[in-house]
Length: 130
Image (tube, rainbow, N blue to C red; front, side):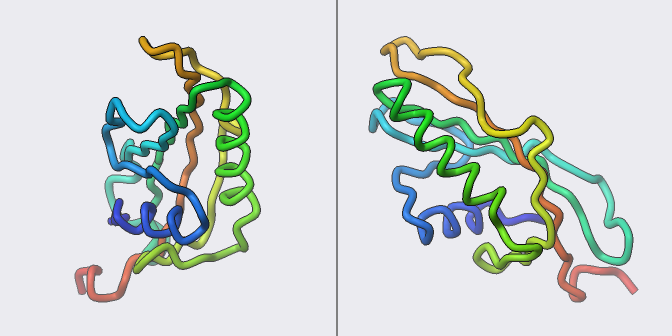
């Protein structure tokens, strides 16, 4: 199972700030929130599973939010064929909808972008039933 904290660790290690899991707080204005949407229900193909992760990117202007969204996409799209995210070994990253796209503005008129990624992770041998 993919550890949510590992994504936060990976993002902050790569220069992103104000990173939140699951819920986006009202402040700060510039923020990234991500949620695990689920994935495969069972281990597949010799100890791999997928996790669908949605990222919401917010900032005070459309230009700032878009720049952060593009940077986030570049980090994931440019990932080598495998990368360690915290303690999780990610063997593939797919962006089924392409780069994050504009969604709307929130009640404080801050621009919001949304991006989804599918992360395929290797399951540690200790997690696999004999």
